[in-house]
Amino acid sequence: MLTLVQRLQRNSFWKLIGDGSRGLLALFFILVARHYGPEDFGRLTILYSITLFATIVADLGLNQLVTRQIAAGKERAAETARGFLALKLLTVPLWLVVPAAAWIMGKPDHGHFFVLLVLLSLAFAGRNLLEFFGAIFTGLELIHYESALKFLAHVLMLAFGGVAVLLHAGIYAAGAAMLAGYLCGVLLGAFWCHRSLGLWPLNFRAKEISQLYAESLPLILMPAGLSVLTRWDMLLLGYFGTPAAEVGWYSASERVVGALGMLSAIGSAAAYPVLSDLHANDHSNFLSARARFLKTFFVAGAAFGVLLMLISKPLTLLAYGPAYAGAAVPLAVLAMGLAFSFPNAILLNLLVASGRSWDGALSVIAACVVNIGSNLVVIPQWGMLGAAGASVLGQAALLFAGLMLLRGAPRPAPVLERVGG
Image (cartoon, rainbow, N blue to C red; front, side, top):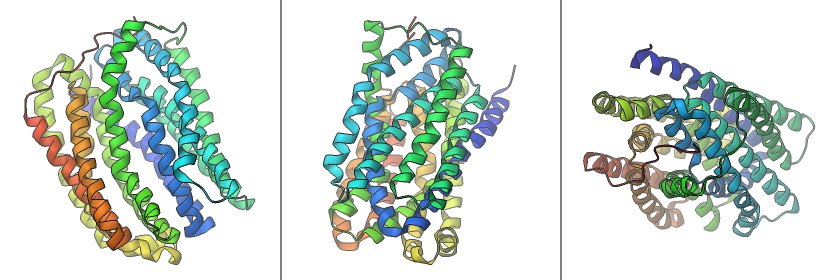
């Protein structure tokens, strides 16, 4: 029987390999940015942001919920997985809305950008399915399976992207490379899950599905709101007529911050199944672990933020080249937000693990109001620098709101004792 520390160490190791492979995704975007230039990369980023936001909404928050349910009751893992997969299949029609909605909102100005749009939509659908299978393995604390799936997908994506660059293919090839990488991961994930648990026959039970829909609402709002915090500024930059090259600089700086922020995502994801188990079966240890996690993540985020501010200029030139020198200043501003985004990662997982998803959703909504309101004021005046400042302010608002709600009494929330059985 492993101790709490041993479980966290094991989970963190495999999460570091799996989620750390997103560094390969960052390299993929650096490759695309350097090859296609700031203007095409800026347009790609706008379509990417719209498609990502629509995809998060279509997911219904099921991936995070399936991890919690399996971690809290591993003896019912097969039944739980079948119930969630049934609900996932019921959401398939929502994926058809994504390309149409993104086309209306994005209004691409060249025909081949519509091809890119469709490819990105399919790629994100594939990524969501891959993460669904990974969430099942995370709940079982068999995270080495999830890590293998993500690592494979990102390696193949980078390899396909390299081939596209060598062949001098158009910008749409970036979307094709993403789709191919995620598709391979989905096929392998489906095979492993079926071999481990047996995903057939599916359980379409109306009562349990309605319960899932009820609890999935805050889990939709949280990732959708987080997408607003990290991506909506890109859309507003385009809306207010910011030059495409400047949007590309800002996107490049966000990629660097996002890559470093993966450390907090890895740590919080490794802790999530353990926290869910502790909350269900050992509440006193859950409370003591909660305080330690929040302090540790805050100190780590502040330290990384200071470091990134100090090396923002040489790092930008090294990663992207002289054409992206303008990204150094927004990168330094965005680095300040790491002191807030790091503890935010574990804070939201703490709330969900303890059945307080609505508190997490309310925190994110409050942060979105602050972020969007700030962006509407500062972007017309200061462009990408204003967007960077508004992003930091939004992360700070999320931390403040989340801590205030965490200290209060829990809000009533639906409790799913079993899913699919």
